[in-house]
Length: 138
Image (cartoon, rainbow, N blue to C red; front, side):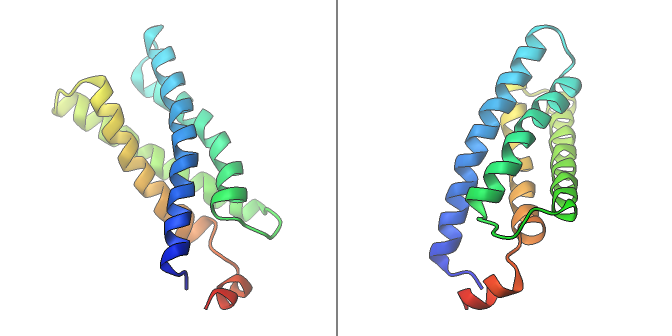
């Protein structure tokens, strides 16, 4: 099992990668919405742009996966990101339509919710250590 220092470093790295992904996401999102694109379509496009960056950096640096990438791993990554994107859609809808919150605040809160889902899924399902790596860390 991971030690506390390993958990802290992994969360820190995930956050650093997440900041880059978020800058890409927000930049594309607000660029598209400034041109009149609906916030749902803008969210799908901006999130997808961040996902491209996320897979490479989280795999290599955050979770330091040593084995060769597989189709199954990438499929799990995409599924987690679809679930995370769905979370952001639902939260955006709730805060914009029901809560009548500003677009910026809605986007920030939806992003935090999506990041929490993404980290948990990435750590526990997508980039989980191999059996050998787990036994070495014990």
